[in-house]
Length: 429
Image 1 (cartoon, rainbow, N blue to C red):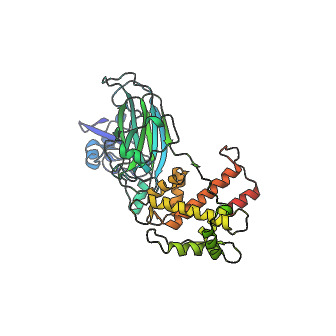
Image 2 (cartoon, rainbow, N blue to C red):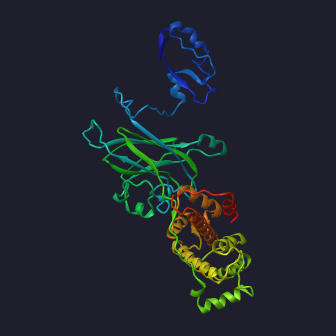
């Protein structure tokens, strides 16, 4: 506003510190002497220490170097007409090893970022620029970064890319496009730039259709929380895309009658007089075998992992493996070794988390981001790699949990009820 101050016009700016308490203390601040030279009718003195204050336009220009204008709708600054834009938002997170894939420059991990689908069906009523299409604005906000300054961190560099959803995935909600798609398809649009601001937003106009919005940090493996908002002139469906949680498990059980003479002889030597293999014996057997291999890295199978294997294979509940049970386990380990080797793309002997995700898919498991993050935390090393024994332990436990669920969910409803005995039996495995 402008006030008459000592025979001249003084331009003032009203400012509010959203955090409160801390205010400007210079000219035109609360209770400053400048207000005494202004006619009472023009005074607007704020005396409360609530973070709101006045300052001269000159001081404002001297003390502030960047101005961000927030608008109620995308048309507030360009039109006086009232429009009701459709607004949807979703809170998400980037997590190292599972959903922090970085920008497109990170070709091997970009696909791991959270993905959101927007369905644009109705074109704008008034194209204005004669360009027919659907107008929408995407805003990406990184959350809770100010508090991170206390530990020496600042804003991440963030942005987003937009892709056209392939025809075969139209209308599907449970789909998370993989690496191969992003390696072979170009983006249709993107944020104007990747920048280390709290919010990045861009306005678009695209033909009707289904599009995928992929928000990311510029660098991979950065942990952060975010909110993505979409403003659309017409109603638009917007939702988070996730793979369904399911497993396609082979019936690879080997009966004792199917075991050949050579394997019977080997089993007899390993099992001893009782012709049973305990978890302790299994641990020793596996570690002797993998110690001879140089193409895979492992610090050895633990007794806990050996117990998981025995529990999965133990049909009669005696805590040990007979001939058929051990033969089935051996078949599984051979299959998982092949999957491990095929997905170790750099021949490092270990798996990166993107390789692990693809390996689980090859093994028949479809999992969402939350479960992938849990597996990384529980089975990954500090450098986000997974060695062979942890890979086998992870995949065995997954198989056991899915088989347990499927056994109880006989009607294939996706829901189960457990009595106390079942709960204890399951959780003690």
